[in-house]
Figure 1 (cartoon, rainbow, N blue to C red):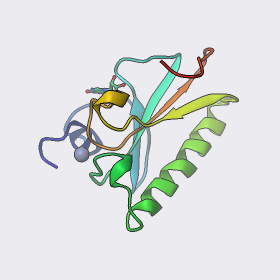
Figure 2: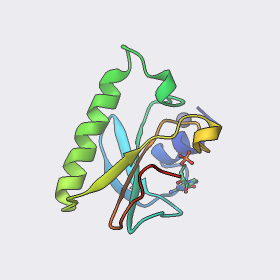
Figure 3: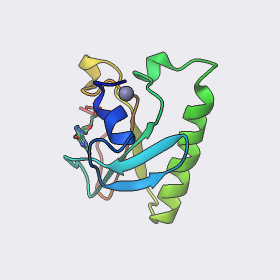
Figure 4: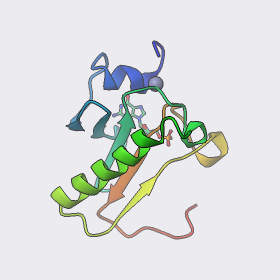
Length: 112
Ligand code: 5GP
Ligand code: ZN
């Protein structure tokens, strides 16, 4: 999608600090990290949020989770949090599906 920030980041039109890339997904450092480790994993195809996940595109989401597990292992993360905000009230500000991977500090539960 032309005017989507994360489509443009995945397509290399807007610079980002790459963590990982394959044909299906792109991982990069969050510009405003909320923990010592904070990167985002996004599908290259535009999916607005978790609420737009269907039987047709769920393979992409499954793949992203295998990538998250691999990256966490490679980075030696023993404890981490995977978050996807859906909708404004939950804190979603970019309407292209993304999974936050956060680690390196104590985290509260329930979240604020
Ligand atoms: P959300 O608020 O939608 O759950 O998460 C969006 C995330 O994208 C935020 O953590 C925010 O810091 C990050 N972000 C927003 N704009 C940019 C950008 O231009 N580059 C990068 N690397 N991260 C961004
Ligand atoms: Zn997009």
